[in-house]
Image 1: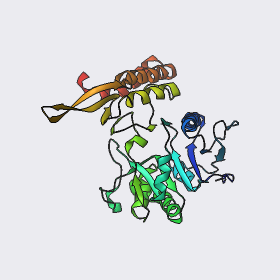
Image 2: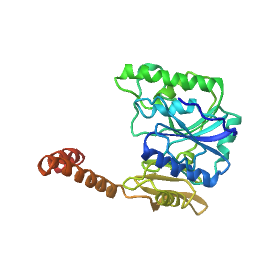
Image 3: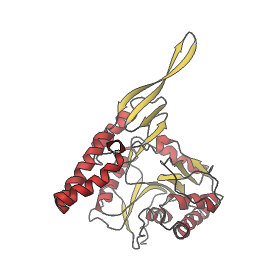
Length: 311
């Protein structure tokens, strides 16, 4: 790992991106940070340093890249040049200022939102209670300390142990969950407005400040992300989102009593359309590469399991 140059800043944002496509995503995210927090220093850790730094103040080469891409996030966090750092995934998009995240570090060592996966992948034999949930590492706020460095080092060592136990390499979240559980770090839980996984399901209350995810069936572009931000922040009362649709929980007083009802206020994207666009794109590619007969057979084997009613 090449060390970051001496950066005269106590606070900053870091990214980790492998390959040109993820660097392009990171640029879009970093530009959204610059729009609302121009005073922050932005650093990119990458295996493929671009000729033009662009929006980034510093680019740090990853000299030894872990085979599991997500683990390089932990390595980059360990080498952050800042006393107070916000790590952002490349597929994040900032919708407003977030100085209050740094304020948390006056009282806590690290802050993240809980993860809400469709299902968990975590060995039961490691002794971590189910009540200590996994954290999503798309937005991580942390301050440098001996304890924090130790936890990150432990998380990296857990990668090999989990690989041996489970037969496959984990991503970055299970190892950090284990390391944090065994640490004495003060952990703050971010609300989902600061890590809104809009592309699947969730709930928010107040303005969404940081979006996190890729829009199904659409390219990761600023204009598309601005539309998502507009939809999800159309109202800032309690709301839920699932499969592209946003619903509010609206309160109405009748005869002196409050009643609640849900109402759809926006459609961020249409997942069914995205599904068919993706299948069409991959299907055409299969047909070009393998020919009509073999390509059609393979395409059907991919699509058919999703439509049991056809049988």
